[in-house]
Structures are given as structure tokens and as C-alpha cells.
Image (cartoon, rainbow, N blue to C red; front, side, top):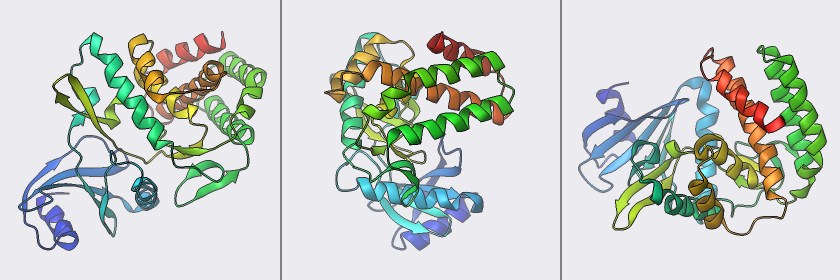
Length: 297
């Protein structure tokens, strides 16, 4: 999609504005993302264009941002919803994954992130499950939800050629630790993709300052520790400064947070292995399998 097509979409959404520049943006595996610079306020917006088969993802994004609008300013605001495209406010900053952070500054950055994730979790949910415009196939408790998710991902692991012995060890580990799942009793809205590519930052007087959290296409209703575990799995990667900052910024945690987060980290790694295998990208699989093995022993 080029300048002319984007200009037509913006003319429909913001008829009093003139397009000055169209810049392709990174991210958006299920949508095409553009930054569009305009001649009047707002002087820049984000336009996300969805293919027909992903129209339901557009519906989901609009719904999740609407849930967060009154409680969290660090997410984009939906300005216009068109046929197959959404216009969003452009938050200040660049992805954290694209900047250089001094080792001694990681604690502060992740402390900010912990505070932001805590506010995200302020949206209570009626049940556990995948979120679109509601919780799909809602489960009344975390045990039934996560048991189903583990069973699904383990079946995918087997179907995609995962090692049988590792499959069995994961299955045994989950069965042995399943009692931890019942500890979660209050489902909340979870971003479910809080990694450094989705966190926006700007330079500040005392280091990097987080300005936003984007891309809510994976949102679920779940135990809030699911979010912290995914951040640990995807971005922290044994960096103690990051983990300490995240947990300190997030605040009070339940007494069993460590084993519960380990169980969720196992789930996220399993899901990631399945994703790469299903998309015919075998390069990361040995490393992820190694991570899975370290958890289950």
C-alpha cells in the first residue's frame, strides 16, 4: 500500500488534514503499519491496515484500547475506525529494543515498566480466556483455562515434531505443578506481549523514560503473573537488573509468585516453540528447547 492509498484513508478519517509524509513502521505481523505526518493537529498519526482475514484483530484492538482509555494514558487512542483500517494517536518515542541502554540503567527502565504493567492490570475481567470483543470460550477459573492451553500447545508441539521425551517431561511438570494455577482467583486484562519491541521510550535527563505500550493484539483475560512471566521469557533473559526493576515497579506479589511465574514461563516458551515451528522457522527451536529443558529438568 502506497502514499495514494494511505492519503485516501486519512481523507476519510480526518478530512480537514493534508498528508505531508507517509512512513512505513516496523511491527504489525498481522497488519501493515504506517506513520502519517499531517499539516495540523494531530500532526502525526498511526494507520494500521488489516487484510480481510484479520478483520477480527482490528475489532479486538479497538475493543481493548477502549477498555484502557479511561485508566491508562500510555496506550494509543483510537481516532477512527474504517473498513479494514484504524487510525490511532502516535505516541512519542521509539521501541526500547532499538536504543542502547547502559547496564546500570536497566533497573530504572524496568521499574517504570513494572509500574505501567500494574496499571494495565487495573481492568478486571469476568472470566479467563482469549479476548476479542468479549472473553471467548470463557473459563470460570485459571486451572481450567491453563490446563486447556497447555494441552493445546503440547499437542501442537507433538504434531510439529517436538522431541517426545521433552514433551513428556513438560506434561509431567505441568501435572506436578498444576495446583499453583488455582492460586489465581481474579482475572485481569493482560497485554500478553510486553517485550522491548512494544515498549516506547524517549531520552530524559536521568535516562530513558517509558512513554507507551503498544500492540494489544494478543490480549487475554488471565492471571496477571502471565504478563510478568512473558516479559521475563522474551526480554529479561536472566538479566537480574531488569527482573529486579520489573518486580519492584510492579509492587506486591503473591507468596507463590516464583513457582507460578516459572510455570507460566514454561507455557510462553512452549507457545513460542510452536509458533516458530508452525511458520517453518527452525533456527530458534534448539535454543527454545534448551530453555524448556532447563525449566523441567
